[in-house]
Length: 150
Image: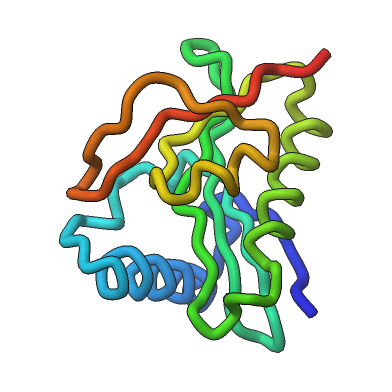
């Protein structure tokens, strides 16, 4: 059974941060064979959703709340551990994200840069693809957005 908790960067302890960086590196750098610098300096501005199963990080996402300059939400680094796949945790992670956004940022649009092969997955949460596919770190992506609900 997975349990989700939200954290600001300053609330993450060293073990949680290490688990986040390890999971993201394992999937995005090693499994997807994508050489890029994951610690991009943006984590300090994000909210972090950790999905824990039996004391281990099984799923993760980061969210950038709306600002005075950008009145929309951006999420990314959506990941589930290899050992946790096929358990439906990706869907539970996204549902937790959508519920959080609807509760804390009602009426605000939600955007992401999605790996293209996950387009249908994100469409299941009301996101719509915009524009053409593009390469991000050598992987095909597409811009997606869910318009703000009022």
